Length: 245
Image 1: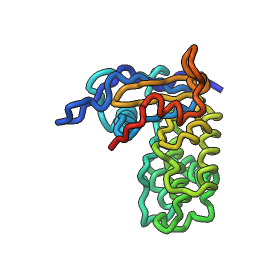
Image 2: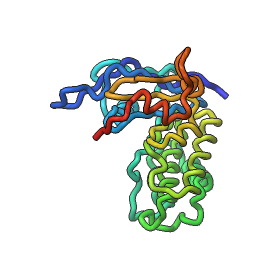
Image 3: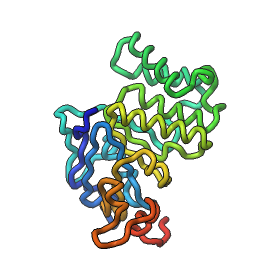
Image 4: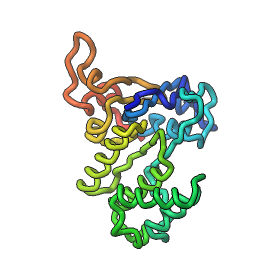
């Protein structure tokens, strides 16, 4: 399995209009094939802004995005909000988004069938999305993103509002994608999920990277200091306990 870098950000800066502080201030990030990076930070730390820059919804005002392989990678984004049409069935949603792909009809059909199977959506194929449970909706959200067979998958709180069984299924699906060579950026407030699927983390606060690297190494703590009991303890150590908006 390749672990080559596929997408990198170098010294990204972004400031929203009429805001006194920049949302991002010199952020670096490297995503590798076959690796999941946990993107952590308090509310307002810059996580969503970083994702928006990575997918091209916003343009960095300083710094740059780098494509180490030469050509831009295929990037799929699974937002926290549901990214489908609630009045359409699960199958109709998959067909609609597959029709946007630059592939022939036979390939579109193959991808739809894979999406239904890998997302365990077969029995819900004809059901309107708005009538599906939270777990099915989250699986549909992910299935739509995977239609394009991305090199890079950006996940923003992908398990919000689901039951434990659906959460376990989604986490296992992410692990399978990583093992298959996909580069994953996993943004969440659920520390146990990052510990379960991510080998590396990037911790943002006030628009800056305040900790990053191999998770196991970071948990061992600074040289000469005590190890952190878990990722939540590490998070609180770096971000402190003050409440954020």
